[in-house]
Amino acid sequence: MRIIFLVVGRMKSGPERELVDEYIKRAGPIARSLGFRRIEEVEVASGGGLDAEAERILAKLPAGAKCIRLDEFGRAHRSRDFATNLAKWRDQGVPDLVFLIGGAEGYGDAVKTAVPDTIAFGPQTWPHRFVRVMISEQVYRAVSILAGTPYHKD
Picture 1 (cartoon, helix red, strand yellow):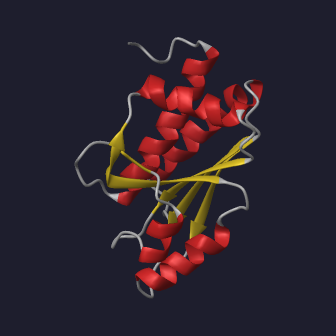
Picture 2 (cartoon, rainbow, N blue to C red; picture 1 turned 45 degrees about the horizontal axis):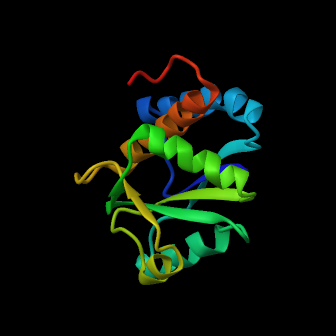
């Protein structure tokens, strides 16, 4: 299973970019040893309104993908539960797992309809660049949990 972070907007260089890159780099070898093909980030242009962003997002969704919107109104998951879900989807033969991060105004109705599943990193509203760091870290943590490494401490 390929894991994709599909995000609206471009992240420039800086500490958040470095963290995302570092967590993806750390997770890669562990993920491959567990049967995950790769972890990648796909950026789509922001701007033009929610409908235009929605069109660009939907055009990038791979056929047959399991898609999840990161949304402050979604359900929060413990890290171990998140890891269990990744393993379940992999074992079910899901070809691609896509985590969506919308633009500054959120998601257009077309995306909300096409991708009803959501998760949240708590009830707060987070800056999009932090959300990228958080999802990349949680994927690293999840594959570390699945591999039995000491990274995650209960």
